[in-house]
Length: 388
Ligand code: GLA
Image (cartoon, rainbow, N blue to C red; front, top):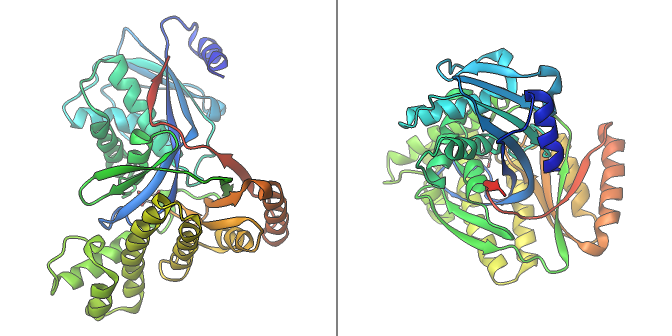
């Protein structure tokens, strides 16, 4: 794979002298959805699929970027001094945003470089293709220009690019999981304090299966930012009485005692999801650490129901995949993952039932929705890194 990418680099940029190679994974969130901008806990893991980058410095100040996934757009070129979001630069606004974010943090990139990217995660499907290319760019910059910066700072700068340069008000989960991921472990991250611990993902005779609805959506045009403001409005009402900084600080009990302060049915439901999902995440991690996979699976299912009924970010495609999954033999748990509104589901399925699962859920999904879903049996891998 790397060899082929280096060959492609030579085709696109003339030769492949002095190139370095890098990889940043995609991520799947096992539980803790729409909690990361509410000061709650998340429990994602990095995957072994992701974004490859083949890169080298240039002698001038030009940045030249090419993606094997968007061949028709050719090389996208700009100078290190022209860092504005341009519609016609399409996917390249993500790496450009990271160069900008480095500059904002005192690491101004003065010299040009060229990169060939290739991603083997589906784009816009909820596996964080955008955070993956952001972290890939971060490690390219760090390595090519010897920037003295640690991974957590690169995670924050990648998030800054997403928030300020791309304009999606996302939390820190995706960039954190992709930067800090560890083989065979999920990360329990408290997004309020950024304290984190690793928990081994030991599934015994079961595996993680991701199913892509193939319903396309971009976060920028989804109701993501709307959910975020609904939660902020609910928090502001609760703060009139409670001394809290985030919904993630509330237990279910305290929320129930005070929820009427919010004064709006819809916003109460949104806040309820944030509070309960945060508590569910803690319970789920405890169950996994105790080897109690059955409880972990039930909490995944409850997470989906809450995202469907209270947070309302699922939609017919995600609900169909999950509800079909729940009926299959050997399914320990299944839920939507990521922002929702399309994208992917995550299921834990007994290895002996994987083929049946893919066939049955796939056939019935196609029958109901009219187009096919894609299935991936995934492995949990390490975070963003330079390759040898
Ligand atoms: C997207 C965002 C994350 C997080 C999830 C929902 O993936 O980028 O920050 O909010 O949605 O859990």
